[in-house]
Image (cartoon, rainbow, N blue to C red):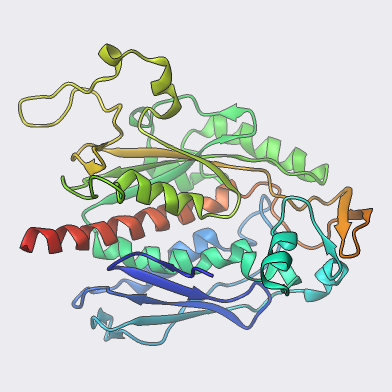
Length: 354
């Protein structure tokens, strides 16, 4: 099982949804970085369950405990170990899953691959694993502090924010529970999520991420293209079904004369269909991409499940779950983007010294 992301700035994680704790080791973080520990906790607070009526009622404080690699608030260059205890799990909500496999979950494939699985909250396959990524991403953000990373909800179900990010006030992302920087659209999204939740159903959506002040030269030209690293990271998020950057799938509908980003004399471009990346390497323009999330697979209504003895039967989901995971996934998208950029920043520095 692959539990590590990154080449030089690396994160290795552990933990299960109903275990004692989640945690990880951040290796390769340079020394001398003064960390704002409150800012790191704030990132966790943005991801934590129980933060509004739109999300799961599981009430975890998600308080991070740093074990090593930091002395008097400054990174030492040694591995940064951390823990985030689990305190509010209810394993009794999952005993009915011991001998059944839920549709569109990892239950069946984990059992077939490993011959054993932790059915309490999904065990290692739980999206609670992302708490580790947010901790490490918050550290990475402070390492690459000149780079600005902002993500927001751009659609929920069929309600879409059809405005370019350049026309939005991204400082208002946290002004509503759904994390959409447009008040009118946000209200429609919230109303839809509440209605879906009443039905015991779920709904998906998309998150748009904007990365500004990126230096030229991050990324490699062949198999480690910057967009490929970002795509792999985003597609590692539970429930993610799609990733596009720059003009994305719209590019397939355009002619080259419409799509080419013509240069200005200073090396910037007049348009940015490339999404800040050309030939797999950042070109200094804004990087922007979109991530699509499916509806959460656990429904609080009856649906057909497969039993361990090969039978089909009806079963209703139990426990505390999000009707729409997208609002809580905003800091997760930002965190993984920060990890990818921090790693590529270190790789660029090594190449520059050769």
